Length: 295
Image (cartoon, rainbow, N blue to C red; front, side):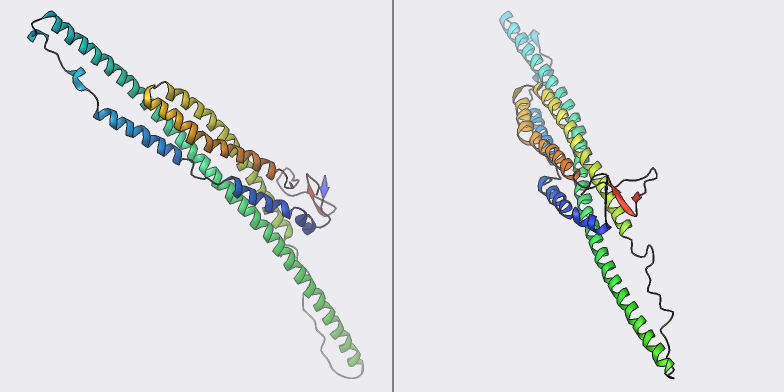
């Protein structure tokens, strides 16, 4: 268990880690619009559906007039033609049903991608907030140092002037002492502990969001593999186009997101973690904040 000899001494010890986490966050999370790959895929499928509809042969739905034919050969030819059209119509129906099911699955995956995009934005926001809280602690420390310097200086000035006033008063001069000026420190007026508490809670939010990002990206990659299998059952040119698009455009996006989450989990774990009691309050020992890892 590690302890800080002074609050700011502990803050300075991990200042470089904070900067590294923020920098790495923006390096690895470059795309927060993963949902766009599904918009493009949906547009490709819709374009194919429109083309198939415009070229569909509707003769399979017509009622053939076999009795106008005279020869048996002609009737046989018409029956064979109708059988081909019926088979074609059944295949078109099968493809249409598979495609519709695929589009429904795409809607679900698009919703999942939107959640991942939101998680990416949250990670960036928490990382930026972490940097802000660290800077606040630096500013508070500087302010406290300046105030303490002024306070000690004022105490010295007042003490000197009152001492001189006492000497001159003994010599018969009437001088007024400086009294009623309160320059002692007030607990809670400027709280370094409160600033660190906010920092530590932001670190916890960042850690949780990074873990969720890596997990949701991993689950999404599994769903993508299922989507590929379903797309392959459509067959034909459309099925091949969808599978190729998933391999080329969709999967790499979420593999990158998953990897980014894993990298950031490692980076965030290097930050110090405050020890808290069962009520969530910071724990102290000998007046010093307790940490789970020593720096």
